Length: 123
Image (cartoon, rainbow, N blue to C red; front, side):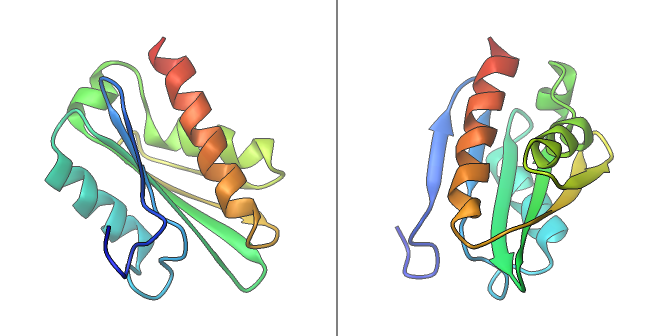
């Protein structure tokens, strides 16, 4: 665990969900950070990043070719995730972003819901 990423959460399935809380300054821009982490983790990885700033939660998701191949599309995944919290988003199958209005405590809820949704999607 690093001092820059004290809230790292890592969940193992056939894919990997990786969530950071509070990365708005360290890992900006979010899409590049998500894509870079996914590339480092490999083709079968999925990455979800969430942070809070200026009264909203920003979410970025990246899915490797292996993840997309088993039906996990980042755009659809992050769009549905944000919609459950009253936000919106979307993007390409491999890379997407979303925004949700709310407080900093919402970051943990969003990441917990992402974990649950990914577990359901992978059966």
